[in-house]
Image (cartoon, rainbow, N blue to C red; front, top):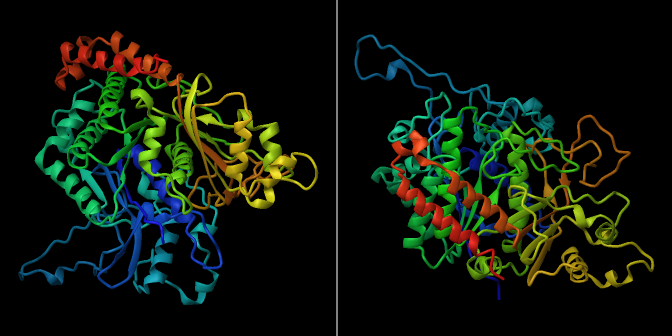
Amino acid sequence: MSQVTRELITLQVGHHANFIGTHWWNLQEASFVYSTATSTDINHDFLFRDGITSHLQETYIPRLVAIDLKGNLHSLPVEGRLYSDYQAEPSTSEAAWDEKVEFIQQLPQEKNEFLKDLEQEDAKFRGVRDEDKDICIDDSKASDDVSPSKKVYDLTKSVKVWSDFLRPHLHPKAIYLIDNLMANTGRASTGTSENIWGFSSGYSTFQREEVEEEIVDRIRCLAESCNSLQGFQILTDIHDGMGGISCGILQHLADEYGSKNSLTFTTSPPHVVPTMEPARRLMQASILQSYREMCQLSSIVVPLNMRKSMLDFEAPCCSYQHLVLKECNAYFTSSVMAAFLDTVSLAYRSRASPLPLANVVDMLTPTGRKVAGGSLSLPLGIKSSQSFVEWLHEEQESSLVSVSAGCTYHLDPVSELLTVRGIPPSKLNRPGPKYASAKSCANAAQLYGDFLQNSSKHPNVRFVAGVEDPLKTTAPFPRIFSPSVTNDGYIDICHKTSVPDVRSTPCLAGLHQSKELGNLLQQLYTSAKKFDVMKVPSLLEEGVDKESWVMLTEDLEEIASNYCSK
């Protein structure tokens, strides 16, 4: 009997969340297998759905609702391009009157090299013939064209918004843009030029009938298209009003889909560093308010933050031994978080025995602990000359790096979910007597699980998943790898190149529950307790008063207290 795929709906809320989400969908599409001669361990039906256009072309698109502010798409139409029919250029001759007509046309946003190549590739697939210079096809050169996934791009300066590097097509209703004027209604003035709106303004915006109706309708349409919906993934900004938007959505999910689980990933962009005190305080307050509400409304909350602090926007970022990251560039830093999401989620979207989302939640939320932490090893760090078992015994201990504000998980570990990918059977072990016990292991997940079972630090519950599919880091994934990383993601100190072209890499990701997460939550509580609302006029303008802040502080104290009990 074939296994039933229990679908998941993904919600992306906020500009930085959409940066991460765009990389994530790109990574998933890069791992598609189009040949029956090639196998894959990934079941993309969990997050993608079939469709058909008005021209009877079959589609396979993300089961997604992406929310942002107007002006954050640039060249991408809000309805996307997948279902849009070709429209001829408007002409003054089509006017319904005989008088002189003045034609005013807004110039389109300039596309970068990747988007132009992608548009050409789409035009070939659809058989479109157009005079537009961006998508016209020269048949004499068609055979010489290189697929965008096989080219090496430098998009460091050309990427301004997340749609500048979006590869998959989206459904016309996938994107919802909130009018800036609407968001400005009730937006607190920080007294600076920094464009920050707070949690309460976001929540009020969601409660506007036209906003709530548009978002809820999109969620309902996706839910109705599912045969066996198991839950929701929410990827959201929390440093501004988008945290309030997300809490409004989570409240709706709790009311209408109470039996479904919600896995919430919260993120704050490391490149946003407020220079003025009012903006900084409003961002801190939004983060505190978001955590208070999301811990109550979500099944589980996972912080995603490159910096080693939730509230210090100038704290150092976590470093990765074999990555070269530009902290001020969202295109770079968001790719790391996407690699984490793409890898750790394989535990519940693999072909062989995927873990139900309800089991993930039960494993990671014992005794009221709603906040779990994430970790990532990118690349895994195996040398070209090493086997996986040799790497485990020699270097594994320090490989995982926190993606949750620098929080570590070694003190009193309770439970963990680990996913290893990209290790083929030939790389598991070497011939010979050394590590002979590992020779009976059929795959990397089994080998890794056995190795951890013999380690000194045992959580109460551990689940190790694995797939042979590596992380496909083809374009438009940024060139973040150090020169010592080979094209297939292994480490070779003799491999030096000025332009690393890493096409794929093994990696490891984890979700953890441990007592050390209590330290992070205790920091949030302590900061909230010291926070003087009366000295932040922008919060008062948003309707936050001293009494409501005291209640928030008490709720954060209760959340943190769950991590103090044995």
